[in-house]
Amino acid sequence: MSQLTDQHVAEIFQGFDQIGEEAVRNKLAAGLYGYKNKPLAEEWLRRHEESRQGFADDEQTDIARSAKDAAWASANAAERSATEAGKANILAKWALGLAAISLLVAVFALIT
Image (cartoon, rainbow, N blue to C red):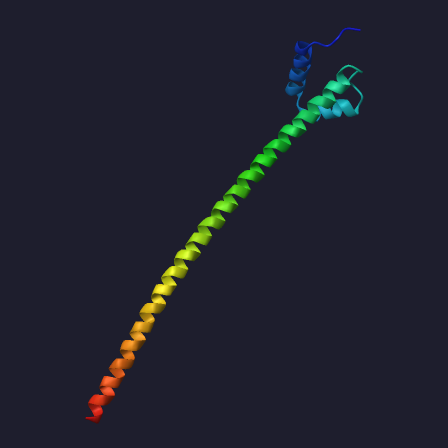
């Protein structure tokens, strides 16, 4: 029996790449890979699954980061809104005070 070299494994993996994941799974399920190639096919499929999972994890991380950024933007907007509402309340109190003074002046003018 000859030992598989890294070059030979790379060539087999390249062949798997050419036929694609579905074909490799089908051939593996049908028992078409011999005792040397069966473990290589299983390893190639495992690596593809890990790679796909890595991409999914990266995508989930990007989505989470976007959600975090949106939450911060929303919190900042809410803080600005609260500050502006506070200013509006102060102005409303001043306006109410001035209206009360105007009413008192008008009532005083009618009495005298």
